[in-house]
Image (cartoon, rainbow, N blue to C red; front, side, top):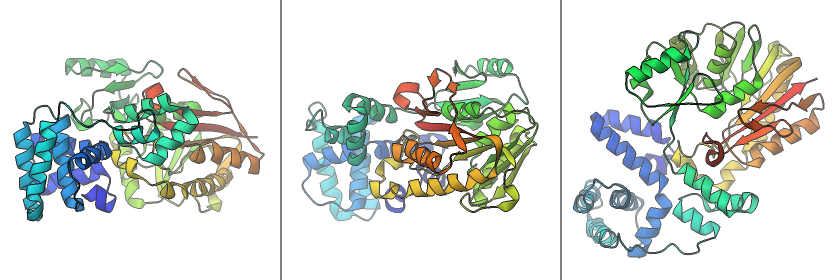
Length: 423
């Protein structure tokens, strides 16, 4: 309800609810999985609900029905009778007593029809993909036009699979080989990223439960974000600006690559978000990161032409991380149209802080051209002193200094990187 009504982030909302009601570990895991399942499958749930119910539903009643449908269709260990009965009880507890009979009837019909559910109409169309994978129709239409139907379906399917946990070994404290042995002693399975030493992928797990978390032997960061820093190639002794730093992953990656030698200024518009950076720096034992609350759109004359590298991981629609934040799929196109101007304003301002021959790294966690290539291309037209610089990261080679990661292609978050050099 908090995600639907208030636009809350699912992770933060679930953490607060678990704490408020004192759920034990097993209850918390079930509640969290069920909440995420509803967010990931809302359109599909609504299709099945609508197939068995013609009544106009209150939002809370629809929430209850979605929870019931998810248990019936996606949770093998929940008996159908329990899913129905608990949903009816939940409806009454939520103050919707008059709708309890409707909830009971609709869910019983869906339970009885599980072997022969209604067929989603329009296979081969964006509308079909939008319902089947519960992604916004505008996004399905846009990507089908630009990337084709098969690619769009593969992207949506990747977004509906659980995201692995990717960690980066803190080489300031431990060698990658030694940390790998620690995982093996703990009998934890993992895969090493072939293109990044010290980058490990595990099945979804709580980072705090892995060996060496409190000691700062690793930090969490997707492979695409780490590769972006590798493309920027910070070196020991450099002065680096991470202008939209929270939660700090790129600052941490830069510090490790710089062997904790040089200076990194990590900024964010919200002071409270910088606590995540400060806490991470302390846990990892990094000493070269300084934090400052600052709006990346507002010019700070004392920073002019003083950095060897500027990292601009700008605010974006987040459409590349739907698999981690499923509530993003409810975004409207109108909310995204304002972002390119904000991104351009940030990029224009940050370009003032770069030394001659310095590197400007522009990145987002989205896959839309409007927020990626077009912002960079417009910037290059306006500022001829900056030129694209080609780079290779892993098996990917840039085109005009730019690369887009797609979950269905690279197995990473959806991510965009552009590397520019100031002549």
